[in-house]
Length: 87
Image (cartoon, rainbow, N blue to C red):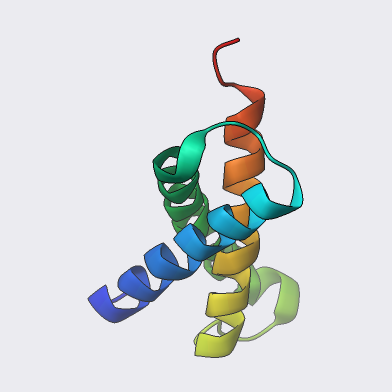
């Protein structure tokens, strides 16, 4: 992964975390959702890019697919982060 794809995944993951909070408020706050989303937005594309050759039989260099998986990963990171927050 180059720096451009990491930055896009981070921004898209943060947006996914923000959107995930809009769907189901989890009380992490705006900054917490952006951070959890950024982490999830970088984790899911990295996992999928590692598994793509085995699952899809091709490479995972499609930028649109990476942005969509970063959005989904950001939303998932935000929702999972809301499960582990302090009560």
